[in-house]
Amino acid sequence: MVDSQLNRYKIAEGFSSSGSVCIYDTDDNEVTWYQSADEPVGQSTILEELKTSGVVNVITSSIPPMALKVFSDCGFTVFRSIGKDLMANIEFLKMACLPIYGLDDAFGDVSGCKSKCSSCSSSVCKN
Picture (cartoon, one colour):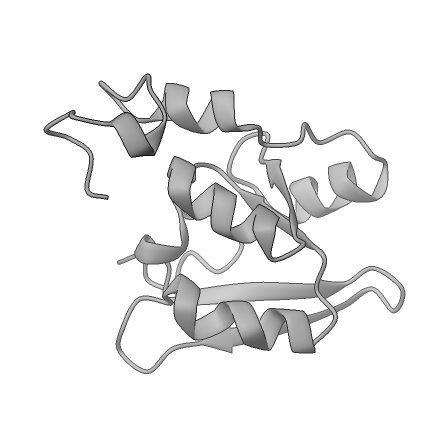
């Protein structure tokens, strides 16, 4: 797990390795933090809260294919970060310069994972 204080403005490898999640209000330029109690923030723990809070965009450096599908099915647009600097990526998002994270990108990120999850037989796949 990434130290959420020391690395607060560094994008983690994903929700499962993060101690906190930054929620940035693009209208008010306001940053708030969702932090779990001694556990990594899990998708199921935060998805409903994010939706309720009006979050529509997610920035991440990597995401497993099935997690991307869950986020997309829930109405979130997932963007691939450019580097690890959180504030720079927020600026890129505001300027519409971040690439949307597609399923092909997610499959390419998972070593040995080149097929749809329903037909996956890879030993590295955790689904």
